[in-house]
Amino acid sequence: MKSTLLYFMLLIFGTSLGQNSQMDLETYFSESEIEDLNLITDFFQMELCGDANRSNFSSCIKNSIQELANWEQFYVQEKISWRKQKKMYSKISDSTFHKIWSLCKTWRTIEPKYEYKEICFGQNEKFAQFLNEIGQSNHYIKKYSDRLEGVGVFESGKFLVWNIIEHPENWNLEDRKEQMFLAIHFLTQNDKAKRDKKALRLERRDIRKMERNQKRKKKTVPNKA
Image (tube, rainbow, N blue to C red; front, side):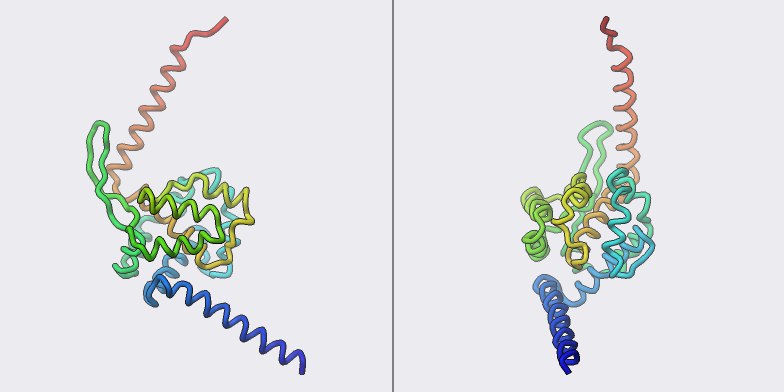
């Protein structure tokens, strides 16, 4: 009898937790937007690890963390198909997309000059508040959110992966809201790297030119006796 009562208490308690988590999201997003956020997060997990089972998200990140740290954004670019990401965008509503992102005009300040569109923060107050809530229990996300609101751009996330490695106590990778944050972050970086092919070619050319100049400088430095 006691075990039966305990079972029902745990069942009710567990259901309440699920409802509260859902209600937290509903503070910031509509029902259809929450469905889209889950689609975005499932897509990211599938591309990164080949598995969209949500209970495996935490292990997906943990198993990929060293590659993410060593390759930085290049590992994400290697794993996530831009063609599939564009197809994923077509499955979510404009409302969801613009709750998170916008397309901003940007340009090169060096020759050759080139103007193009790049994904950026949608400046939506509800999304900013959503990140602020997650940041109450995660110091890194709080700083990320503050910078996003203050500067208006997504950070490159060079320190994000190392924060997960060095401060795992800050992260609850079982929390769906944190999973959504990570999916949005990495998909943003993939988009920034691949949306405009000409801008990418010019950037790679700049890097090669800089590397050649550095090699020339090393050759011209006289050897000290």
